Image (cartoon, rainbow, N blue to C red; front, top):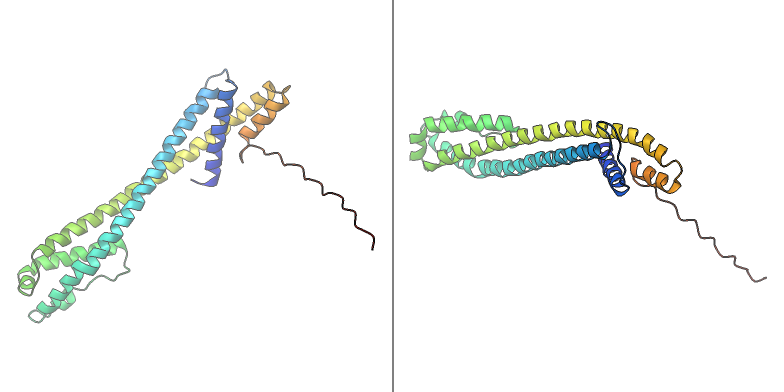
Length: 227
């Protein structure tokens, strides 16, 4: 949530609380406390949706890193070692079993691992005869599927976050419009009440309630002794 939207939502909460505290409502369709509470409720739901999208993306990123580490440091390393041993029988395996670089993108990594898995299935008998456990291919396929699921989860989380952010920006703008109308009415209603006028100004102020500065304490006059 950016700073402008956050400040607008904070303002909406303060204005809502002010209206509740002073039992001040507005006569008119789509105005007043009920409308503002509706907007605040919508905003809170969007904030929750925004945070949920971020949480899904973050969780998927952490899971993906763990899966990729397992693939690179254990499963693919084992496959590479076996393929090098089997290349004594079939030299073409050296070119066929090139491992993906550590820093390639996730999409390139998925394509590379999928290709290696396909080739390993084609050469399964030869690889098994040179020390590969048959379960390695199942483990590779399972890990690759889990990896791809984390990519989809990240895409879903980002879509949710971006959609909620766009909707939240629109709701925040609507809140500003409502408060602008309320501001005129409150100034009119409390024109003879300086205390409520000041309280209202603090509530609808975008940066938060006004804070009165304490007057500076004058320094005591110190009489210096004559030299």
